[in-house]
Amino acid sequence: MLTSIFSRLSVCPCLIAALLVTLVIAAPIVNAKGRPPRAVFLILPETQTPPRVDVQASALGGGRYLIKLQASDFMFTDLCVADAEAIPVGHAHVHVNGEKVASAYTPIVEIELSEPGTHVIDVVLRGQDHRPIIARDGLVQGQLHITVPG
Image (cartoon, rainbow, N blue to C red; front, side, top):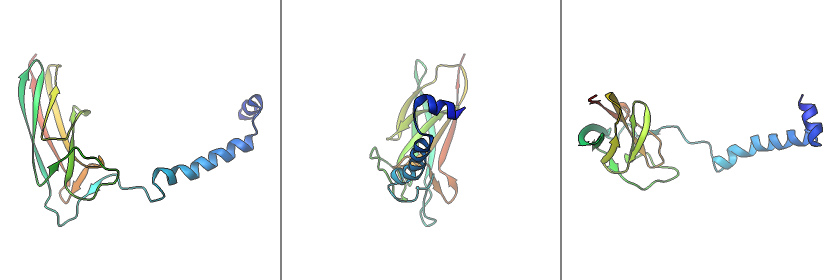
């Protein structure tokens, strides 16, 4: 089947194969700037006091909620970098029922909950390069349940 496709396109299969091999070899080098890929998580040193985040919410009316993030041993910033140091500086991702709804570059963020029922608000602290922060106690996160009346 592939042979008939290539013959219809008047393209040599060897040329296509060579281009694909070049892409497979070059793409990781370009994406990692010639370095090994960075870790998925930003892992803080064992000597670092683990950050914490407590989540509180206040109803604003009309389905809007003010989410307050009380973070200790963590500094919020809106400065993002390509490869962050392993320090507790960054922002938070706010998820509602498993779906990301906001990035919090300050400890206060507004979200909307229009559907009645109980909603799970998960907050994960992130480094300046958007990687989730891992401290000696694990993933640095907070959670809150909000029930929206029907």
